[in-house]
Length: 240
Image (cartoon, rainbow, N blue to C red; front, side, top):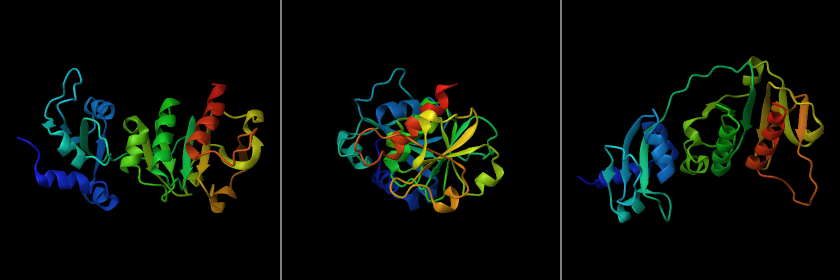
């Protein structure tokens, strides 16, 4: 039995945040990401594949669709061969007391958020904290850019009260802070990375004593949030 028009329209509706929130479902696309997903313990509601999807071993319970049907399901102009509808997880929030933690303040670009999740995964972070105005973690572009890292990195939403309960030292990424290459960085801390254009909100930044920056040697005006996060995390982990 193939896919129904109703199912196609349902998958298409999940491109929109209000429907993801209403049904608590989101979409994962791409052969590698879907294969990782199906091998995990996440709850898959349904999944679809074309005849060219050929992992070994082949997962069960998928629905075979035509290339044209996959084009209708996908938000990409040139989709790959697999797509899944997934139930949103419910994660328990425990305020961290050790390790390097990452807090994102107002990240608005879904591609940047997905890239940051992938970077966090690379450095072994199991959780990332973000302000309530950060872009939706289950936006299709976020999931795409994470390249499967959304499966391993929990994303928690918390406002500035997070810093009243978390007792780790806090470091804010700013343009005019101390050169991170000269900073004595601790093994346990929270790194704040701010909005792509506006930086960290003043309400939060005013409470942070440790301000660090990436030295600029050329003429580029700025780095995007993903690149900055990678450089700063590397400096924190370099001494580990």
